[in-house]
Image (cartoon, rainbow, N blue to C red; front, side, top):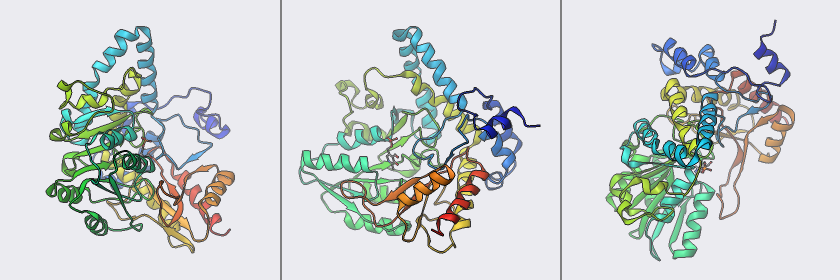
Length: 430
Ligand SMILES: Cc1ncc(COP(=O)(O)O)c(C=O)c1O
């Protein structure tokens, strides 16, 4: 006999209108305890373990979402926390909303611990766009100063630099690079673009298109010796794979927490090294006494406290799985489809696929096929969602390769990956 959950899944009703029982933190902690002695790579293959994680979400499984990198679904415990905080805030907004925000130093402290920096270097923002634009628009630059970035940095960030170019007559240099490429190649290309006029180096930890990993520490060290400030776009890196901010040695870093941390939509973090805080103006004016206070970057006027408070539960969920286990599972899911497809005729992989260089973001193309044809076939015939990638015209990202980006997540099932493989095998024949 079908269980209630299986019945709802089979009829496609699950998650749509009916409340279903999902796993909470204690089930995830118990599952993790049961695999405590095993390596992350072994747990990555353990479907019994990942079923417990999958059941922490109320998803629409009538659709196969392989564009979770845009912004992710949240575990039910995170959604519930936000709803509770919304109710609470609404009871006496002026008191309870303020109180929730006053408690945000707890979240600041826990985020700082997780990402490896000082609590006083961590600001909570609404997304990576806000974090990075605070840095891009907040740094003093004069006409003729140069900013070195790359052609495959995020369009909004490139647009922000282009606007500063028009406003302040600064010079923006976009470094081109092929995908996939190596850390050495990226380092050399960027170093060659630097001149005595370079004041800022802005690049991704991993790019949004192909998941290309950058040698952040090496680039940051090189920049520091030349008096150049580093702005690192970690929108996709934060909580997708483990790293510590202080080991990256960059001056500043922005993350979207609604991507891989599975935090409420509209949350991000901004890291600024302590001695750099006063070098950046905040988005909204702060008193002179706050010049060296990381909290100056959080001044945005009245805004929902509940969304930010939900970060605490997302962090608890992330830690209950474990950053290493999560990274290993994402790599396992990516390699399952990549290995099945990579040797097929016309298939072109745009991502490294080496361990330690790829996790849950990878791009693939089919020779001679427009991304639009790929995305519509996958959607129309299989209800699979992916992101289409085709190099656009300036001022957007411009690049000379095309295909789709595939971003599974901790809630993606093996069956969903296998359906994607089957769909791609059909698509290459067209
Ligand atoms: C590399 C990169 N930077 C910045 C952003 C902006 O993120 P958000 O829209 O969450 O602000 C994104 C979003 O996908 C991204 O991929």
